[in-house]
Amino acid sequence: MKNIVSGIQPSGKITLGNYLGAIKNIVNMQNEADDDTNLFIFIADLHAITVYQEPAELRKSIKSLAAIYLACGIDPNKTTLFIQSEVREHAEMSYLLQTITYIGELERMTQYKDKMIKQVQGVSSALLTYPVLMAGDILLYNTDYVPVGQDQKQHLELARTIAERFNNRYSETFKVPEPIIRKIGAKIMSLQDPTAKMSKSDKLEKAVIYLLDDEATIRKKISSAVTDSEASVYYDVDKKPGISNLLTILSCCTNKSIEELVEICKDMNYGEFKKMVADELVNKLKPIQERYYEILNSKELDEILTNGAQKASYFANKMISKVKRKMGIGRK
Ligand code: ATP
Ligand code: LTN
Image 1 (cartoon, rainbow, N blue to C red):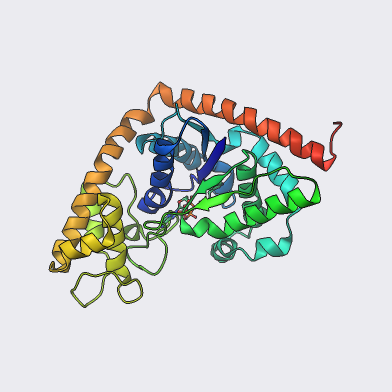
Image 2 (spheres, rainbow, N blue to C red):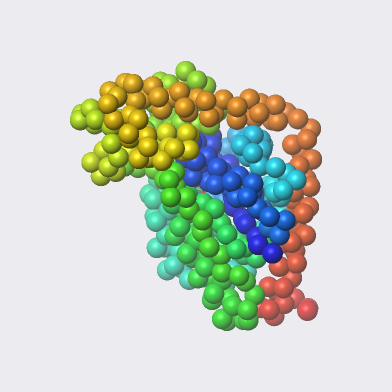
């Protein structure tokens, strides 16, 4: 039996980076999975509140992310889709694993360091322990594979360390999970600063393509994307980060390789090239957006999430009981 686990935080509007780096990967794995594979995909609302979220907005984002997962191709008959906070074992497992995680390990995490400097109201202790919650999410389901974008690699390494440490200190309990990171699309860059990651929490709206952006907005954002003054289309991340990022987006939308696309686009001027990127992106996102609006207000969505939480709880509860027993807490 193989288990696959992944989550996304409902901490804002879902971006093209989230889709190409994570969701597309998850959907592909789901569609290729055999009967012996279990997929657990969740909305990481406990992770989102490690920085302040306006409650009414958060509630909306949770439902919206659930509908986005389904619109992108998550099939509830094949995948257990649920909201993290509705499976209590996630918070419980996080505490148990904190007992074997060192503060120094958490202080070294680059995402913590990046997010910490942006805090105006003080840094919550949950922002520091965030990777332990994530390790818990993964280890609860005896996970083999974790499809994520490049930025989560360090958190995955820590989850592996925690699993190995637990196995050594108590006895063999967890599988040691492996990240699955796509070669192309694992790090989509900001359209305004192509040396920085495209991120949900970017304050500059035109730097980010949101999955639900309308056609006119997508075209405007692509046409104002930062490039360079060379006027020649080829792939070189160091010399041409903007054009390379657009080539990556084009490759992910068309399923053509970068080499093939460079051959097709090499004589285009930047205006023509950007138009092609925008056309393909609109083609890719339109059907997803149509499905999204159908699903969002359907009764089915609630049923899927209720069933998902029930099924996930069953597995999570078994693992928590085992972990507590091994640690010697409780009565048996
Ligand atoms: P935030 O800005 O709130 O930290 P985020 O946009 O980084 O959010 P997450 O919820 O942290 O999004 O990430 C969800 C998934 O999307 C993760 O697997 C992450 O690796 C992936 N991901 C996020 N941004 C990108 C990106 N620019 N390119 C590729 N994958 C990405
Ligand atoms: N921290 C991740 C989201 C996340 C996750 C997980 C991903 C929370 N728990 C478990 C994979 C497996 C992020 O992308 N920011």
